[in-house]
Image (tube, rainbow, N blue to C red; front, top):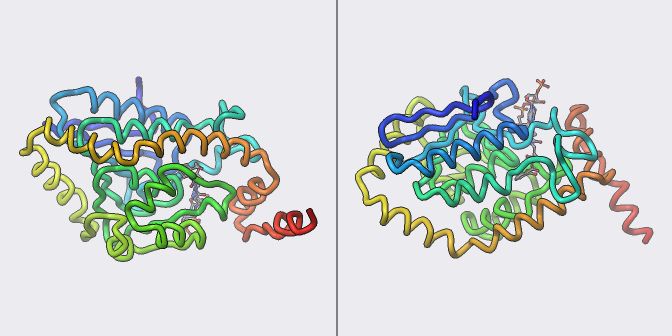
Length: 269
Ligand SMILES: CC(C)(COP(=O)(O)OP(=O)(O)OC[C@H]1O[C@@H](n2cnc3c(N)ncnc32)[C@H](O)[C@@H]1OP(=O)(O)O)[C@@H](O)C(=O)NCCC(=O)NCCSC(=O)CCC(=O)c1ccccc1C(=O)O
C-alpha cells in the first residue's frame, strides 16, 4: 500500500508511524485510518520490530480526530452506511491493541476528539509540555461509546472520565499527567529523544514476555471491543439526526452550537 497520509519509518527494532496531515492538525479521513491499520499490521507482523511509536507531524498537533471538512453532515464519511460512520476507527483501535509490541504515543500537541482516543488506546503515552487534551464529541455532534469512554475511565477513573466527556474542556499536559492520562511530560524538544530512550529500554526486554503481558492487560478490557462495534453503529445513526448536524455545522461556521431545540422536543413528548 502506498502511503499518502502517514509516514512509516523503521530504524532497527523501532517503527515510527507519523500521521502526516499537519494542514488539518493531523485529523484523519478514511484513507488515513486505512493506512494506519495497514502500517500497524505491517509493523506488528514483523518479528524484527520490538516497539511502535505513534506521533503526529509538525509541532501543533498529535491528532484532532475525524477530519470535519471531509465529514458530510448527516452522513459521516465516504462509504458510510447505517452500520458505521465510514471511518474504520474501531478496527484501528483493535489493531493497536492486538499488535504484540508495546505502542507508545508521542503526543506533540493537540490530542482532541478521536485523536485523544487514539493516544488512550496506545500502551504508553509521553506528552510534550505543549500538548492539549480533550473530547469534543457532544459539542460537535459526535461521541465515542467504546474505548474513548469505557477504557478512558480505566485510565483516569469514572469521575474524571465523565467530566472529560460531559464538560468537553481542554486539559494541559500537566493536568493529563496528574489524572493518569499520560505516563510522562517533557519539554517539546525532549519528546522524541525521550520516547526513543523508552523504546531502547523496551528493546532490551523479552519480546515474548512483553507480548503475553500486553495480551493479559488487554484481556481485562477486551469486551469493550464489542461495545465499540455497537457504539459505531449507533454513531452512524446519530450522524443522520438534526441534532448531530447542528453540532457539525456550528463547528464549520465557527459559532457556538445550539442544542436547545432538542432538549425542548423531549420536554414536549
Ligand atoms: C483542535 C482545536 C481544539 C484547535 O483549536 P484552535 O487552536 O482554536 O484552532 P482552530 O481555529 O479551531 O482550528 C485551526 C484550524 O484547524 C481546523 N481543524 C480543527 N479541527 C479539525 C478537524 N477535526 N478536522 C479538520 N480541520 C480541523 C480548523 O477548522 C481550523 O482551520 P481553518 O481553515 O483555519 O479555519 C479545535 O479546532 C477543535 O476543537 N476542533 C474540533 C475537533 C473535532 O471536531 N474533531 C472531530 C471529533 S469527531 C471525530 O473524531 C470523528 C470520529 C469520531 O466520531 C470519534 C471516533 C473515535 C473516538 C472519538 C470520536 C469522537 O467523537 O470524538
